[in-house]
Length: 348
Image (cartoon, rainbow, N blue to C red; front, side):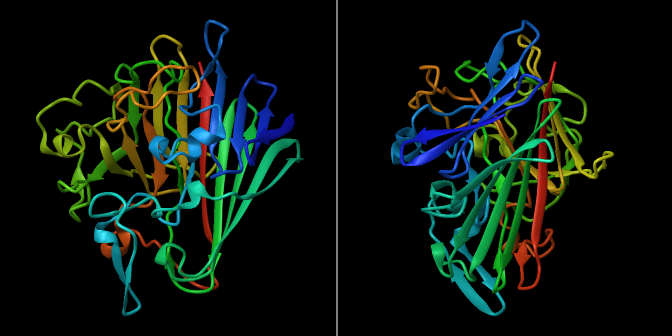
């Protein structure tokens, strides 16, 4: 089932499947505004942080990338510059000294063209965006398509595609903040998290990868066996001190499942009983524990979004890859098609 309604100057699309999940997505930034999931008590719980009005998403003071498509380049690029084919490109430094999530006006702040339809029995939203040469100082004319599918068994699938006429960096993801006890719940620290990642890329004090690739063993980044997010988050480990918690790229072990995607994570909320499994074709995931939420943003339920009241699992290539030649490549060239897919499966 698909319905469409006005959402300020944008549109809001509501998708429902027969398993009880309802997903709401606006074509402004491709933002997932709501993910309503049935839980063990029979209640329906909205597990995605966000707002009920478009104006809250467009205000600079409330800009936290809730639920949005991130591009052209998700995550950070050191000092906002990179060398490509003998030329230096300089991007906006909108995160202290660094470029973050596509710049001052990234893909999260654009109105995308939208088509909603049931395709082979699957409710589907197709969003397209043209990013012209020199937008945010990136090279190349870029055509982007993002496809949302609401599958049965309470699975949300996001597929990304892009082509260019000049070599350009690309790294697309979705920036939904989750709280499986419900948006507005004050903490995610008691969520049980398992990450299928044996290595991570450590950062410096500016949250930029040092270039090293380290084992998670004997570190707070070892989530190979499930543990609560809060178990080691406040230890004196310098890596956690740099980010006030987790804000790191973990390298997936790339253990494929039957659908050809890699296992990324399993998360369980102790009270609601809701479990989320994440699978992706991407080589990494940015685990962010909501360290910069400070209670100043008021969500849909009327509750403030406090410190560590939401977490993100942003499937993507590694941060600062254009400046780290040994990281998996993020340069898209003419004649190539960027393709990526991530699934979020909810159950209890």
